[in-house]
Length: 276
Image 1 (tube, helix red, strand yellow):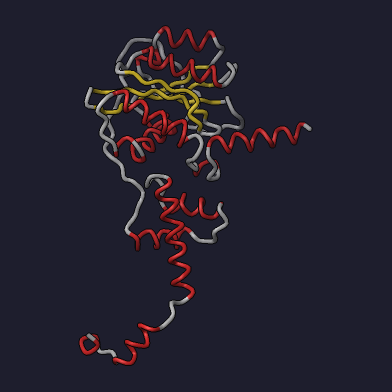
Image 2 (cartoon, one colour):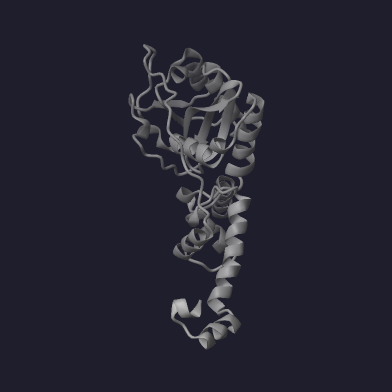
């Protein structure tokens, strides 16, 4: 082997007996930490979020270094699948104006909510999911799942959001132009609770990009990697992802790599200090 590689035997044996460098030992230790974070989050985290998680735990590392170590270990964040539209905007029902105009920033909780519907395939057939998201913290504050995609699906999710948020007034609630959001029951629910309706332009998914982004994340990190035998199994798994993982554990880049729950607590504490 030494002859083929054109190295001396003495050099080879010296290399075999040499103590590993501090850099090598540091990389081995970092690999262990990266692997732990990667598996705790079920392969959902790439190098940016793993880096923030490690830094939060007091481990000094750069994103570039973490990316290189992940590449050397052959691990990467879960990938995406193709998109399928669920919006039926071909109706004659009244629609709301686009009040957001792609401004997805919010200064406080319950200023702006967005909502949308997606689908999950099971061996029993489709399961539809509607969510309401607070644009301030990106928290999923209301959700509903059903085998039918209708007005009950969105109204149930909105009712959950209202209960969890203490029935706030004056919230801008943004959706697409789907018939469920243009239904008489949904519009009445908005009016009864003094919420302000807003809708995307026809056929423009970018006008509701935050909701689309959440569904992309849900599918890439969770549903695309399971085969659900029943709708009930899909409901349980989706519930766990939203309530146990996404709102409480997953760091979000748009809110300074905090979790939605952490971000709202930080905001609440800051407001209390200012008031005092």
